[in-house]
Length: 97
Ligand SMILES: [Zn+2]
Image (cartoon, rainbow, N blue to C red; front, side, top):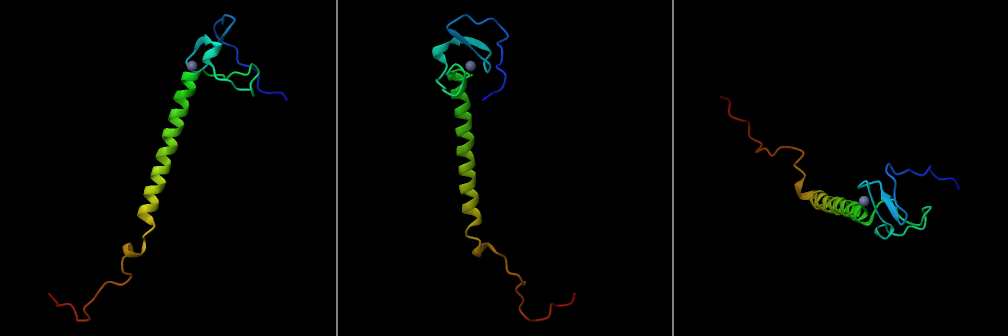
């Protein structure tokens, strides 16, 4: 299985360290979470960048769920909100001015 070509860090990275392409710094390998799908079994971005990414993702997801719930609340009980199709009249002719 040929993946994408590996990115090369723009700065020399000492052995035992890995370059994070998100915060653009070299960090110890331990700062990168395990990911068995990658060539070195480490994530390409460091844990703190990963944390920020997941926080943003879950915050967005939470907001979408909240929004969906609110929209459901406001659209579901539609019956009492539907305006009358015909305006209410008294049956008497309107006075001519
Ligand atoms: Zn980082």
